[in-house]
Length: 154
Length: 163
Image 1 (cartoon, helix red, strand yellow):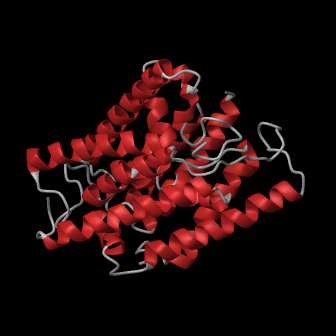
Image 2: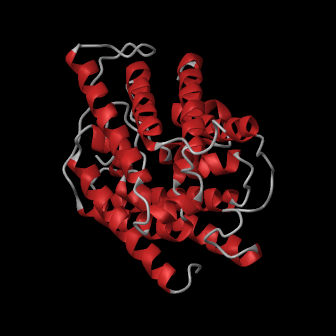
């Protein structure tokens, strides 16, 4: 099926072109974190939301469009599907919430997430982004290996 | 912000979300396989995206292009690394390793109907807002450090994440 996993050599350049499109139209870097910040701070007054929030809304819609196109859309409280990294039920949701808080706090401290630093920032040659990207990749690999050694789930 | 800019942002977001989903970036198992060095696909995806984006941005700037919607000249600035880039990234990386997802793919996951992702998204918003308040307090205590130093990608139209 054509909607099986898109190979990296197609998906990667497409993502790169979309980052260029954002630069060419709005002169903005691509970063998902900004949308969450915008929603947290201006979500109560929708008229004040910036482009960052609309990019994030678009990503949600794009995910829905893919699932619908593939015929795999199914709303569920599931997180990673069967065999996902988090335990099911309330403990899983609690770990997810806690991981989210750390993710949001850390990313904003660093000034960006995987997309803001690891894609946009690196593409613009930012040394701050290179530093942040090496740090979060190193830490994430360490944590993933640790959890894998402990049996895969926290 | 003009409605046109919002619509363009939304459209690029839709395309980005679709490609992320298609490449399985929203699947925590695919992220875990990458972090455990069991497959190289996500690394190669990111590397090729960075290469294309780097060339594209430099071509636009070299051509003296103006942004099609906003009319401003294509330009950006970047900053050297500071301790907060490392400290924040270590926190972020730990959460990434536990959750197997990060803010972009998380939004895709929610769109795909895996609503457990909403718990992480709520956490991301809480954590980011908390950090924002924390940054303002720190700045007030230690003026003249600008509170804007907590800015995220996109906060400044010309900024590179991590000013």
